[in-house]
Structures are given as structure tokens and as C-alpha cells.
Amino acid sequence: MIEVTGLTVRIGEKRILRDVNLRIEAGTVAVLFGPNGCGKTSLLKTIMGVEHYRVESGRILFRGEDITGLAIDERARLGIGMAFQRPPAVRGVKLREILRICMEKRRHRDEDELFGLARQLNLADFLDRDINLGFSGGEIKRSELLQLMGQEPSFIMLDEPDSGVDLVNINLVGRAINDLLEKEKAAAQRGRAGLIVTHSGYVLDYVNADRAYVMLDGTVYCSGNPRDLLEDIRTKGYEGCVQCRG
Ligand SMILES: Nc1ncnc2c1ncn2[C@@H]1O[C@H](COP(=O)(O)OP(=O)(O)OP(=O)(O)O)[C@@H](O)[C@H]1O
Image 1: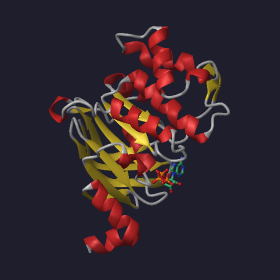
Image 2 (image 1 turned 60 degrees about the vertical axis):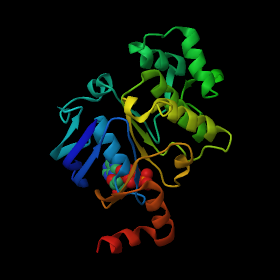
Image 3 (image 1 turned 180 degrees about the vertical axis):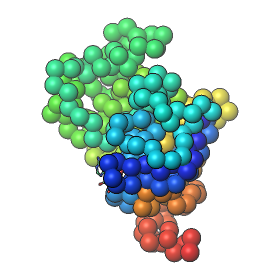
Image 4 (image 1 turned 90 degrees about the vertical axis):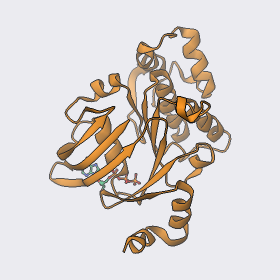
């Protein structure tokens, strides 16, 4: 589904990613661990095509097509979607309006369908509010997921979907992520894939991830079983990853 090879990225003069290699197959979910500031969000934003993340070398393939030079809206239309960690508030644009745009390519996109999606994420009362304006941290997470559910992308990136979400809403979030990733289908029938950034690993209680990657200092350092790696990081810290690889 997605293949990143030798990706080195700058913002202004600062090099924030170096020689990143990553491959995520259709039907699978990967998680990305790493300390604050190591480059996890930057990797997701670069794959999404967010402005100012300048690819110096390397490339990003989506379903075999080189998308490295495409604009963010072109990538979204191809089927790449992202729930941002800190999306901006947009005064004067209602959640309902942005959701209608997200749902443009869906077969069913009437107001009943839209309302049903919002209800799933406990956001029916938010549809006529300005997007993210005054939303709490947990409400922003759910609003981001709602937009992805409307968009139905094939490759889904989630930036810390489990941080700041309370114990009741984490169930809704977990279920929404599983819906998005078609986890109810048999592995061979799943056409989507995901990449999830998490610090706590709470999301792993809901989503059966296939592989985990550890990012350190702007590069993917190692990969392995998600639960094993999380346990290693909990007990030995990221320093343990450095020692482990020698
Ligand atoms: N627009 C920018 N200008 C300058 N530096 C930036 C910019 N965006 C990101 N960086 C820097 O790039 C590095 C990686 O940031 P990034 O947000 O990708 O880290 P992260 O691993 O997602 O961190 P966290 O776990 O804290 O969310 C940081 O040192 C950050 O300050």
C-alpha cells in the first residue's frame, strides 16, 4: 500500500527526517513509537503532502505510484487520509460542512448518513459548531476520526488518536478505528492499511496492529512485534533500543 524509501526531509534549513524506510502492506496496520521530537508527526505529514515539508531525497510510493511530488489534495483524492494531532480551528466553517466535503466520493452521502456517522462518535451536537473552535482535546480527536470516516481513505494515518481521550470515549475511538481499518473483515479481504502514532499504546487494546516501528532522531531505527516493542520501551526506555541494536 505504502512504501517509503530513503526519505530525507527538511523544514527550512532544519533536517527533520533522514533516510527513512518503511513499507506497509494492504490489510495491515503499523504503529510508530518514538520519543518527543524524533520526527513521527513529520513523517505522517510528509506522506500526506503537507506544505513546507521539503523532500530532499527519497520517494513515497502509494499502491506503486510515485506520489512524492503530488499536492495534499491530490493525495487525499487518491485515498490517503490523516487524523492530525493538533488541527487548526476554522472560524466560520461548520463541522457539518467539512464532513459533507469529506463524504463527496461516498455512494451514500445524505444528511441521515452524515448524522449517523456523527452519532457514532458522540458528535451529533457538534455538527453546527465551527470546526475545532473551543473543542476539547478529546473532541478534536473524535472530530478528526469523524472526517476520516466520511472520507473513507485506503491508507489511514492517525497521529496519537488515544491521547487525552477519556475511558468512555476511548471505546468509541477504538471502534471507529477498527471500522476505518476494516478490522471486522478477514485479513485477506481488507483493502485498507494504517499507520498509527502512539506514546501510551492504549490504542493497541482496541486495534490489533501487525507491526511496530521505532523512530529515533529522524529515522526508523528498528521494527518488531508491537506489544513486545512497547514492553521493551516501557522497561528499558528508548535507550534500550539503541543498546539493543548495538
Ligand atoms: N515547522 C517547523 N519548523 C521548525 N522545526 C520543526 C517544524 N516542525 C517540526 N519541527 C521540528 O522537527 C522535529 C520533529 O518534530 P515532530 O513533530 O515530527 O516530532 P514528534 O516525534 O511527532 O514529537 P511528539 O511525540 O512530541 O509529538 C522537532 O524537533 C520539531 O521541533
